[in-house]
Image (cartoon, rainbow, N blue to C red):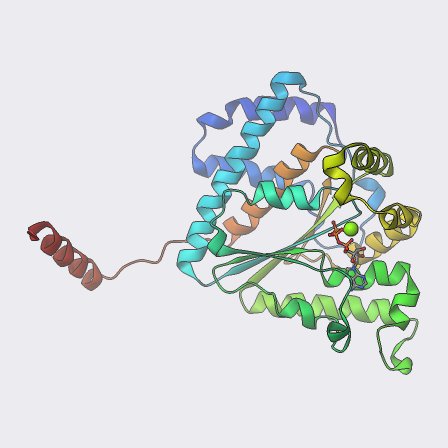
Length: 322
Ligand code: ATP
Ligand code: MG
């Protein structure tokens, strides 16, 4: 669990300086360990206030380089593992990103996946549903975008909006064309159960699901909103609607706590990532993805003796070619 600060930052500095000298195996081990503190695992006792929004290190100028180098090492390790995932073509990985506006979802996805072969990776964004989508059950539109075997699928928002924005603004629920008698006080519990079952089903079919909540503070969101107004290159990212949603902050935090409590499981855990510092958040996310890939025990497919002999024959023929 993510509670500490200075001691951890010192360790981070010490660890980061050593990283370049580490073997891939040791690097993976460190990434796994680092990610653990943000992994909720079984959610029963989850309390959002026990998780920090701030990453607690202050490494100065030299630290910035260190952080970037660490992220790059993580990104490289992740890319190498994704190559094996693709070659093996059995498992797939679904990464779900949820957060308040301006928490850094888009940037995290862009940076963490920057080394990954685009052929092995699919990003899908889910906004307010279309009328066609509202004509179906709530998982329908997401199911169409699940990753194929050997691929990493990224959901930028997801079916979790169904227990977030829809819970915060109940009039959205009324517009979902559900039969009235199905809208009961148990609807959120029902949806949690459906989501748990869906993720279990995916798991049993070889898709590992891990979920990230980018935990940004209300104060940091305010600063990022102001920056989006002041910086002409960021104006496009901001709308008055975003500022309006901020007014429902406490309702959203309640909805997040509830959903994490009810849908974080050992096999499909939520990671609550401190998001006030973007670089730190990205390192934590990359580490968690490395952890998930490592648990798959990936290996390049082995080639039979027959096939090896065939390859040698082809090589010989190529060399003898005039
Ligand atoms: P983002 O806000 O993710 O950075 P964006 O600004 O490009 O992306 P928006 O047009 O703001 O996209 O769309 C996201 C909005 O769609 C969010 O406010 C989200 O709550 C809403 N949304 C997503 N899924 C649903 C859903 N199932 N029902 C209602 N609203 C939804
Ligand atoms: Mg938006």
